[in-house]
Length: 179
Image (cartoon, rainbow, N blue to C red; front, side, top):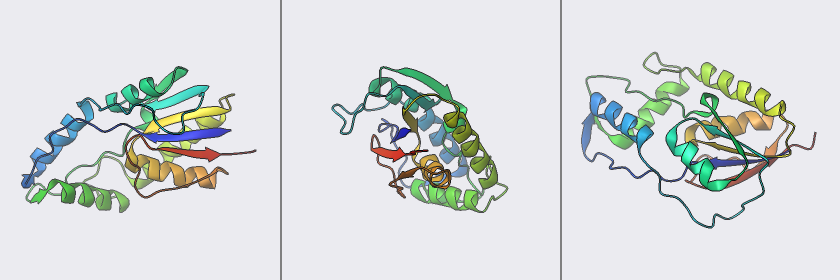
């Protein structure tokens, strides 16, 4: 089975500048989840996909629809790892809120909506769903932070491919399992 992992296309958003509160960070996350995307034309590495699984968030769905003409299955299993502010008292730049949220998630801090264990279980559930398909060329459209975790677990499940710490918007990475 060949898999293509793609992070959704770039989101058209206005990132807050300067120092933001926890509430402003939460508002921006909600806005980002609903914002439109900037499609990429003539993407390198396009294939004739037989099936596409995509996160059910709009930016991923719109990306999937622009990348393939095959059946597209939307699933919350491929949603981005939700990040929340770890403290209501601080003001931080947006990038620090995101970094702090990722660190808090990695230690399963109580401030986060989803623990690391829950994320891994969700990714493992998706891999089981993937194994149940009878297709050979499957496109997966998801989100950068989640794709990092998913690619680790795909490696453990016998798939080979290039893992990355940062997925660029619209970048296609191929994974293969000969089993």
